[in-house]
Image 1 (cartoon, helix red, strand yellow):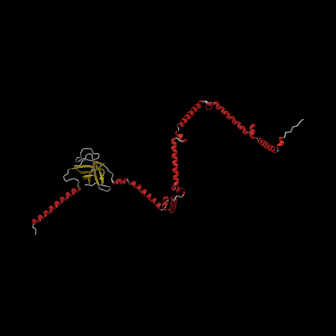
Image 2 (cartoon, one colour; image 1 turned 135 degrees about the vertical axis):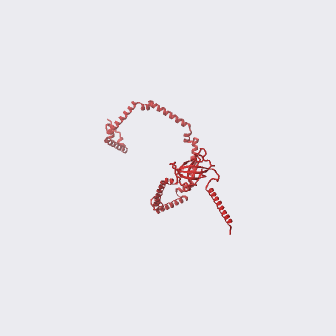
Image 3 (cartoon, rainbow, N blue to C red; image 1 turned 45 degrees about the vertical axis):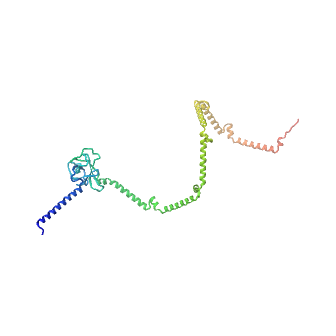
Length: 355
């Protein structure tokens, strides 16, 4: 049977073991949940937000995405009505924090936990000290994003419903696309067309028909090659100034003659504008124009009188008896000539009478 001393010693060892295990456990929990060393100096900073957005005590505090501390306290204070949520941040003093650094509530992914992210991108102030208040910026929560995108989701839902109706109509064979997909008559026509096309391609490959000869016959190529050779030869001749077209392009005398002709034409136009010569008088002399107009009027009057059958010339044109008499005289003259040819003695005998 153990003595009382042994029992006490056993109880003391158990107590010491429990105490040491509790201390080790507390240290491990502190090291696992914290981001600072055991003897690292810290800063206590404050930030005020409109809404905690699911932030909890112990949540990480990060500087540009790097863990530098934890949230030690979250509370609501009435002294900041616009930003009533007071968050106390416990961060390590070894990181470059400024008084004008900006604290933002962010989430790790879409459904991750909320944490405090500090940004130094625009910070240029002095080093932050314990008790300083950091600037804050709001960031839309996932609920706000979903609420803002509800209209877009409704539009997408309407679009999906319309697409579903269109697909259903196509499956029932309605509309042009439905008939194209489900109408057997169209398939038969397409199959017939493909068969005809295959036959046509086979004929062309065998060199039958105009297109077949065009593709398979060397004669066309030779003719085309000869034509191109002749065209090249013709172009060379023209470039050398041979032939009419070549002289037309290369002979400078043609340019000189054309230039002289244009100069003469310009001089002629100047003379006409100046009233020189017949054309000039015709263009510039009003008396000559009046005479020409009078002649034209007289000719029109004569033409009208002839058309009306007035005067000898009018009767010559309009009186049918003149045409009849002239025609009869021509007939009689033709008969007389005929009779003289048949019996010339009758008309050519000369009778001489002596007294």
